[in-house]
Image 1: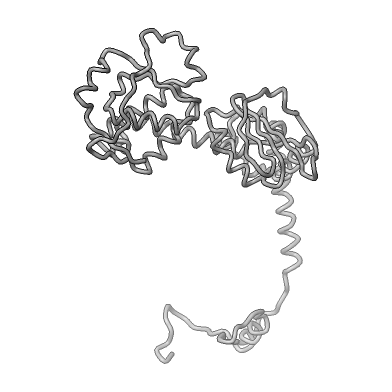
Image 2 (image 1 turned 45 degrees about the horizontal axis):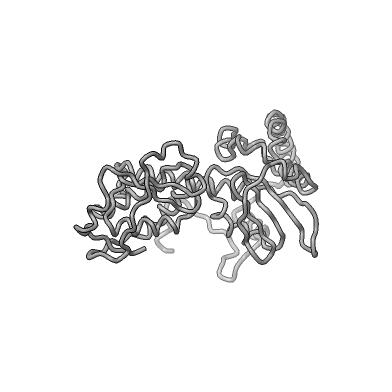
Length: 339
């Protein structure tokens, strides 16, 4: 994103009084393009963040603290006299952070951009409060996306025109449903599916990726044949010898468990893990003993070095063209000088 920022013209400075607050409204919680367009215009007109109150159209009328907040006057969109370029790295950071659930994210991102006019790399400063907070938002969003990739569980609902139909319920922490669309489309292209969340839904019919309104968990089936297969698979791959309960709960937080079919098995598997490990060790020891008995060969001691060399050559299994057949014996750390 490239745009220009200039000091506010003298004839425009009187149109905004420093004591007034102005509401800037975007269409919805994920209207990043709308926010960027508004931010570009505000920066061109040198509007300080202290005079702005960013909000979303869907919740604009629900606020109880709108007294004295007015729509800003029409601002100039013309380019100024100096260029202000934002690094792609910073844009990626902002685009990700704006999917966070905290309502101050639009104000925070604009404030950081406004300050970057005079300190372009301030977003990289770990000691800067705005940059640090925005980075924390982005990190939380990325983690939420990772969890949605990992913990969505589809349930089969039927068959239509030779294509299997699936549905899933998920409860993300942030506004990430639209962002994860390409991942699920590319991974589950061959089936029709719907992912329902409280805020939004996402569906794929083999041709189009469609964003829709949210729904209720009660509208999503609770079990099916695929769920039983998934539970069987999880039971079979469970390795009690590698069980680390704290690490497991860190990677698979308990708040997701009520939507995962395999988590119903976890308490019993953990309870039985000690006995399962003991059985595995006893079985392994038995296999080692049987293996030793089957491979032990009783040989007599060779009478000479020539006999030992002949025996070693006989037991050589694989010899390449450039390898010697006979073993070479010697003493000490180095080869004889004659060699």
